[in-house]
Image (cartoon, rainbow, N blue to C red; front, side, top):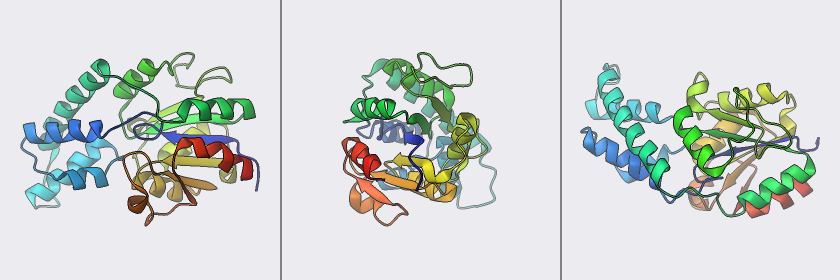
Length: 239
């Protein structure tokens, strides 16, 4: 097994603290636009492109899989973006437990750091900016060995978001990493694990202190489940 060259992290719940705020913003937008959905259903689709989630939920509510949901989806999605952007502009934004320590370890080891997310670029930039992680990235959201992260990909920058593998593949393409066996992908949702499986990365890791518990992640494909990012350096040392 080759040494690790790249670790790809999810954002909300993995590297960015999330006490279910995103779900709350989503639920508020759904309620305001007439979409009925349970908290459990929203949680199950956490990590996916939010526009895709609205499309799935509106098709379910309209009980017609071929219905034209465009106007319903757009209304809900626009409401959601307004609520979400206001939240991240005005509320505290913090890294998760062990995130900064793990980033520091990866820098010491010369391992590149990338972030992928189910968010769209505008809100991704708001979050990265609040954390100081945008500093030094170029117009393609690529950094250097001196920047906090070396790449950022949002779900609206690829053909499809999770559970498809396209964000992982795009990160690898932009950073010039070709060996899947040298790539770690880590996230806190089922679709993070499904996306990593679809991409075929050598290390598909789940995080159990984010938006999903161990029991919720266990049924999904993974190589190992970590209790926090503080366990990632030891995993990498032994990989």
